[in-house]
Amino acid sequence: MKINDRLIGALAILGGLAVIAGTLGFREIPGQQFGSAFFPRLLGIALIFCGVAFVATAANGPMVRVGEVLKGRSGLKIATVLAAVIGWVFITPILGFILNTALLIAALAFLAGGKPFPSVATGLAMAVLLFLIFGQLLRVPLPMGVVESVLS
Image 1: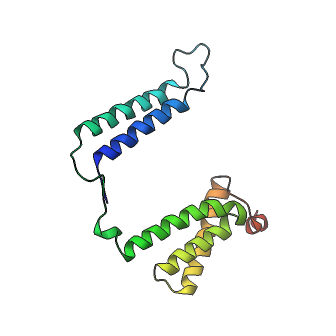
Image 2: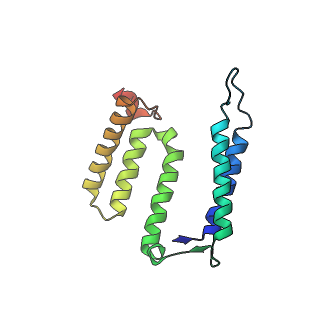
Image 3: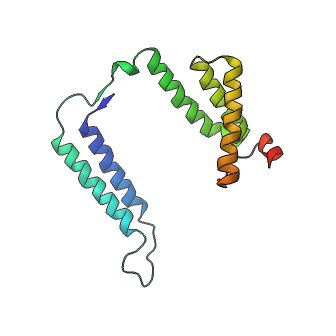
């Protein structure tokens, strides 16, 4: 997929404006020369300048050109992965991290052409490994479910 620089520039301008708008509620730090909003606003201004440069120098042509890779069955697989990740974000607070991650990995492995047993085994092993690394070792707060309450 090829995206025209005009579209990327417009998104950079919008992103810069969003960063600046997000800093409007930041409070000033007493006794400091620069407040907490200084560097984020500097970044927002840089994004706007880069976006304007992209828009000004972009070649004419279609805004988005879809390559052959995204057409047909391979495009469907990419859309499935994106939908699975978005679904994971919304379902994880309900089912918990381990169960939902195991289901996601197993389903994607199976859809990619894996056999049922290795797909399920991989899903379970990866979910538990990720829980141990992020939830226990790095102490990242993960959504708790039935499985996590037994393990913790």
